[in-house]
Image (cartoon, rainbow, N blue to C red; front, side):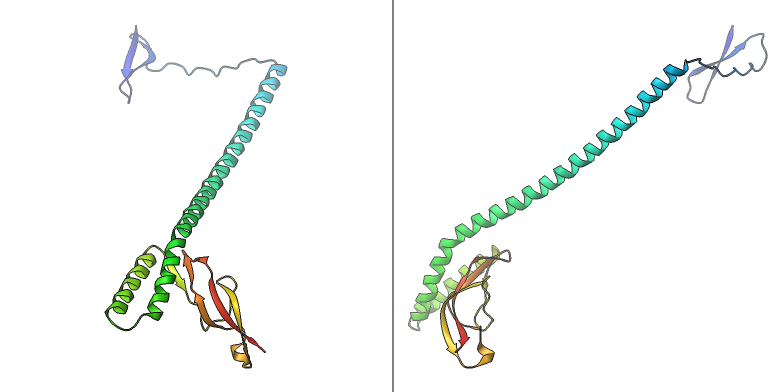
Length: 191
């Protein structure tokens, strides 16, 4: 009868001891499997082919992951752009109303009506600024076609004033650092 001892994992292990037997069984000799050389080479070739296929699949997987990350980043950029464009369209009507209120402010007589109008304009500008819409300053700065459209030219003899914006007819606005409406300006040019 064989003696069963408990190992570290608590399961019974059969050590080949019999009740009357010696303390230790002789070590088993390594088993050699005889595989014909042709079959061995065929198995080796299959193993190498499987490893190559695994590398190929792993590389394809990495490429697909990179493509996915690129697509995700592109979608985020596109979505941000679409949101900005939608906001720019939405702000278009508001900016036209602001232009008219600014004109009314310039022509209003001093008094409570002008003070109320100034307060309303300041509140509107603050609300739009909180949404990321900012007025782009142009007067007194060099003309920049990215932020302004020259609608008039003022001749000047002073080289220091050449290409400076001297008057703004309609202000420029930027949303998130990108100009959504260019200013209409008068630019000084050497005569």
